[in-house]
Image (tube, rainbow, N blue to C red):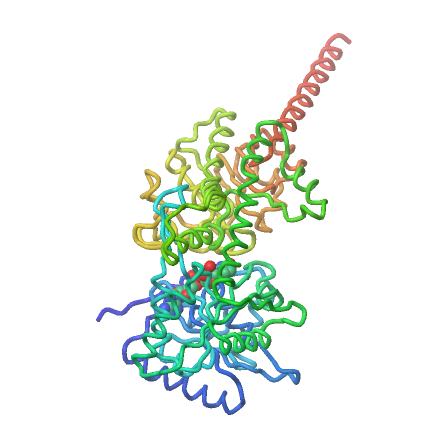
Length: 562
Ligand SMILES: NC(=O)c1ccc[n+]([C@@H]2O[C@H](COP(=O)([O-])OP(=O)(O)OC[C@H]3O[C@@H](n4cnc5c(N)ncnc54)[C@H](O)[C@@H]3O)[C@@H](O)[C@H]2O)c1
C-alpha cells in the first residue's frame, strides 16, 4: 500500500500510521493510563483536537487540586486523516496545533506534555476504552447550496454521528460523554442518544449512555485560554446522573467559582442557548451593513459613530462588521437551528425571518469590498483588470490563523472574477486551504469557488509572509483584518515599498484620519467600508494643495516682478 502523509502548516511531513502501528500505540496508552490511575487521576479523552479541542484538552490537563496535584490525565484523539493527522505528533512534542496570539497557549501545552506529563495525543479509537470522560469537539458543519441563501442548505452531521457511534462502540458503559460541539438543537437527545443506545444494546449493555451537552464559548485570539477556563458555562445532561457528572467535571476544570455554571433542564436548552447566542450576534452585525452603506454615501465615519454610541452602557456591544463576518460559528449556527426545526423536530412552516436574513447579509457583505476597490482604482484612472491587488489578512478575525468562512475569501474570489491579480499576506496563515485545495476543501463540491467564474488559477495562490515583498509593485492594498501588524503601517513606507501611489481600501476601521490624510497627500486613493468621511479628507487635501499651488504661483509672480 502506498504510504500516506499529512503535512503541517509549517510544511513538515508526517507519515500516517499503518495498520501495524495501532497495537503498539494502544499498548503505550494502556501503560500510561495504568500509571495515571495509580496516581488517582481521572482519564479524559478529548475527541477532535482542532481549534476548540486542542486548547480544551490543555485546560483540562492543567487542572490541579488545592495542593497543586494534577487531577486529570488527558488524551487528545484525532482521526489520522491526511488533513489533520499532523496535529497529533505536534501535540506530543508539546506544540499547539493552532496558531494564536494568546501567550498562554504554548507554555500551557508544553507544561502539560513535558513537565506535568498530563497530556498526550493519539490516533487510535481504542483509547476510548480507557476513558472516564469523553469530551466531543469534532465539527458539525452546515453546508450551504447557494451564496447568500442560508435556507438552501443542510446540516452535515456525518463526522459527529460517526464519532458518536465509534464512542459507543468503545467506551466503558459508565463513561460520561460530554458533547461540546455546536449542534442542531435536539441532537443530544434525538440523534446522539438513540445512536449510542443502539450500540450499547448490541454490546449487551443495559444502562443508558451518560450524555451531556455544554457548548464552548471559546474565542481564539489573545484570550484563547481564558475564554475556555475563565468563562461562564451552560450545561445539561440527558438524565440526573449525567447532569451530576457534567456539573462535577466542569466544576473541576473550569473556574466556576468566579464564572458560575448555569445548569439547564434539558440538553436541547443548552444547544438552543448556543444557537440563539450566535444568531443574536450575527443579527447585530448584519444590522449595521445597511448603515455602513448609508455612512459611505453620506460622508459619515461609521467607526466614530459607533464609538459615540458605545459610550451608552445599554449599547456597549454594538460592533462594526468587517468584510463579512466569518469564523466557523456565526455563518453556520443559525442554519443549524433552522434545519433542526424541520429535520429533527418535523415542523413544516417557516418561522425564521431575521436569522436567515442576517446570515445572508453577512455572507455577502464582502462583495462590496470588490466594488470599493474597483472604484478607487477607477478614480486613479487605472483599470481593475490585471491590477495587482494585495490583500492584508486572510483569517476571519484579528490575530488568529483561522480562515474558515472569512470575508477575505470572498474578496479574493470576486476580484479574481473581475480580472484582477491577487496577492495575500497574513502572518498567522501559512496555507490558505480554501484556495490551495479548492476542489476538495472544505469538502468536494462545497468550495465557494463554485459561485464565481475564472477561479482555477487560485489553486496557486500562496500566502506571503514578507510584507515588503508582497507590497512591491501593488496597484491596490486592501486592509481586510485588524492584525496588529497592520495597525501602524506608515503610509510613506507603504507607498515607497509599493513603488508608486496605490488604491487603499480599509475594511475594518484600521486607518485613522491622519493615515488616511497622508495617503491622499501621497497621491493615493482611499476608500473604506462605512467610511464616508474619507471624501471630506480628500477634499481637504485637494484644497490645501490648491492653496499651496496658488501661494507658490503668487510667490513666483512676485519674484518675477521684483
Ligand atoms: N472555533 C471556534 O471559535 C469555536 C467557538 C465555539 C464553539 N465552536 C464549536 O466547537 C466545535 C469544534 O470546532 P473547531 O473550531 O474546533 O473545529 P475543527 O475543525 O478545528 O476541529 C474539529 C476536529 O475534529 C476532528 N475530527 C472529526 N471527526 C473526528 C473523529 N471521528 N474522531 C476524531 N477526531 C475527529 C477533525 O479532524 C478536527 O481536527 C464546532 O461545533 C464549533 O462550532 C468553535
